[in-house]
Image (cartoon, rainbow, N blue to C red; front, top):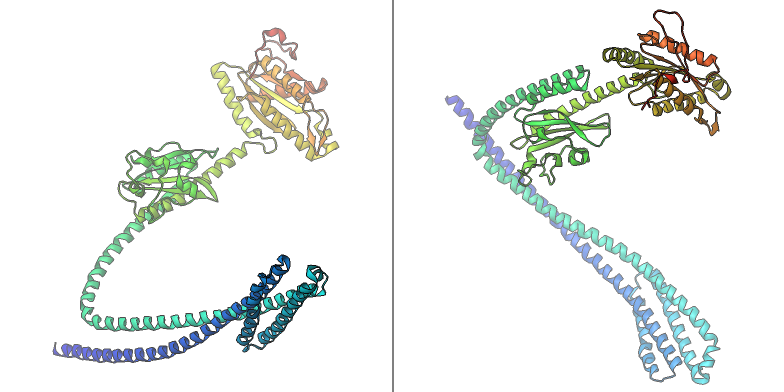
Length: 605
């Protein structure tokens, strides 16, 4: 213990000696700095005073130039007033102003004597002013002898204008030169003033800094033990808090990772919605909220998943303009700010001021540069930074998953559509055909199928090119989409062949609709590169479930046979398939005229 105490005592003595040495050195450095700054300030102040003197000198020169020219102008004005009015009283102003021009000119020459260029210009100006005054006196003499007519015919008047121009030019030249000198001197004066201010401010700051360091050094030893104990206790608290935060962070990261894995494994938005309803209450415990996605029309947001029972969970369909996060493209409200506005889709009559806005958070869901929706969180207490970060991270995970699911749905939809015509493709036809046959069988409803083929399509391609053929097919597909009913299924079967499924339409209605399609196609004017491709016609074969078969294969085969029969009969017409008689092998092809006697025709929508 004694050895340990001696060690501590020796360490304290050594520390005291080092402290004393540092304190003395600090005051010596302070004294040196103050002396150096004082010398520099004294020099800077002297230079500033000298520069200020020259600035004042330049201002006096400019004033004297102005007064010289003004005196000459006053003399000329007095002369003109006398000549025009003929009143002798006007000469009093002339004789009063006459000596002033010479006085100002001489004083100007004295002021610019230190500048050779300005001195030379001032001498020339003085000579011209004297010459101009002599000219004015000559004009007055002529006026006294011959009147105003003598003045008008005098050559001195023309010379006076030229002399005035020269005098004004010299005056402006001197003003420009002096203004340039003034600008240089003012700039230097500003520099000197800035240097003086900088040195003074620096000296004060250095003194304050050194004094502060000395004060800190005096108090440091006294506070060292208390600070050391406080640091130990604070370190224990921080270590415990950090450990708890690390555990919470690890748990949150694990939950976010699981949420991302589940969302990536989902195959539809509905499946992802079910996962979010389960995961988000655990990820954001004690809060309520909702996830709303923008619809296809981009004008409404519909909630797809909610949790809890707060305001955020109770919000229904709303407009994108009702949410400030969607308007701004950022989280609302921003971290550490007092929100001035509350999103209208979260408005409640129980809100009091802006305090309630601190308990709500809207996070925009953005993926691949597209705004998908908004994640809304509400809580009874103020939303903490941790909850805000978790909500933002969850929003990023959900946004990516929803963007992928929407892309998958888009690809599935595109796989069922023909890119050129916009109609359904053959795969969708095969899936729909079986479904419609089962429905027709179960409900005892009619079902018809139309096989369509554009007449002489190869001739169009050979004559106008494949690009024109594609234009023809695209416009023909658009015509079918406008002509058929909303419940009909229009498909591109392949090439220039098309198929239409007509649920709840018998053979008579289907044949009537086929004739309407033929008529509409005849009136179709296909333009390609501002050129008409000529008249287009189509041949159609019609088959009805029950009359021409009870399976998709039989109906397609009989409709195709009717199509070829229509082509062989001259094209541009619709033909009904041959009727199958179970107890007879005779088959009778029908056209629209042959079925008109079957009963009254009903209009197909």
